[in-house]
Length: 534
Ligand code: SGN
Ligand code: CA
Image (cartoon, rainbow, N blue to C red; front, side, top):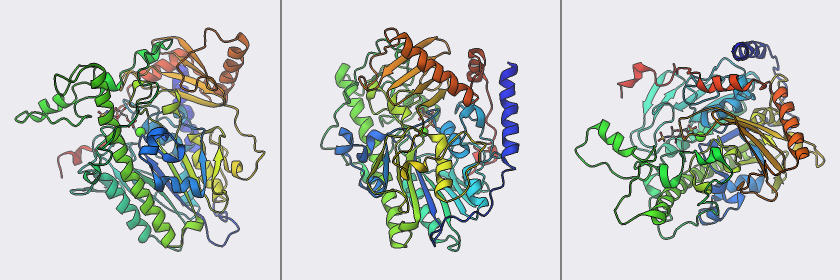
């Protein structure tokens, strides 16, 4: 217990010493024009749904504009999230620190992000950059470190696809009446870029709500992909043998998609409360079928097609919006001196293991898509398998811009990957997920992944280890923990212990369970004074 509260004190000290960092006014670099940054992030965009990554479904639903970033720059194949849910990933990206250090480690009962901490946008701002964040934020507190913010605030900070509500600079609230959320964010970004102070460089965070559950595309995409079906992934009918934690999940396409997800319409005449209940039927595994003849495997396949098509239709909107931005940079002479990143707050399941959602340290939700263009540095068509974590993003962007990277963050710049063919980076990445049981009943776990192996410990109401050989079993269907050599397990456990120490995450199991159980109220989300106003 004492140790757990030490962790809170540690954060406070950390935050106050961070604010002392003085890295003012280093010149952006030797080139005549300063380097701008556009950081684009979607919500729950799986790498399998970006055609640059080459999956079968992405061949049928390509993303030509997002791919332009990879063509003109680099595609990173081994970028990992350190806690695969929305707020925690965003907090780690902003601070360069793991969840237990920045304090935002759960979405549910996890409180609000402490915006007084050092973040990479603040450092850009202190170095003369104009900074803005537009779109999804989902951290409760008003964004800090930005000259301009316009972020989604309704539906618990998730925002909605239609009639989304935004807060501008934490003061003014606006509700969109007509446009789909992607279109609003797309237009707002171009408006901000067009009206910016052109005497200063800029750092813009362009963050979409899509393709988050419940996957509602703009009506202009309703007919897309309606004349064919997408193939199901090879692990679609996984039965979770040898993986107890996975077998307890509540995120199966077959059993946990609700009526709202599949766009059923509640019977007319119901009260709002009853219709909400009717629509969320299925969340807890309640059986339903849209018509009595659709049953069994046919029903599961039907659900998958509904899900994947709406998901990919949402992506079509993002791809368009990325194209709009890239075209704007081209036609305003900005392409050569602007870094463009495309990523997602975490990965996502598109039917692999029979799932939707994220959270697990298994590849599809652990791995983040990451495409980056920096015309001054990165050779077009670069491919990298370097092991990167989301805590590295801010450091790398600062480093690209020639701004000193603070020493007191856990992330590291990976700029050298693009400069030096012999660069030796990390030998392993670290992961820790805490939220339980809501949503989707994923047991808290931590682990280590090297380029070949992955070792996971589920510790909350289980005590089980899993080990995967990613070279021979890339789909992680075969937990080899009980049959692997003692030497292999010992060497991975010893490296994992080193990482826990290095990242100051060496709490006892009891303390970690307490972190899961601790209820930290949200204070800032949807201030009550807004609730009844339009
Ligand atoms: C909502 C979703 C969950 C999802 C979480 C977290 N349910 O609660 O399915 O896992 O968000 O997503 S919903 O029925 O309300 O859509 S995250 O991206 O914010 O982490
Ligand atoms: Ca997310």
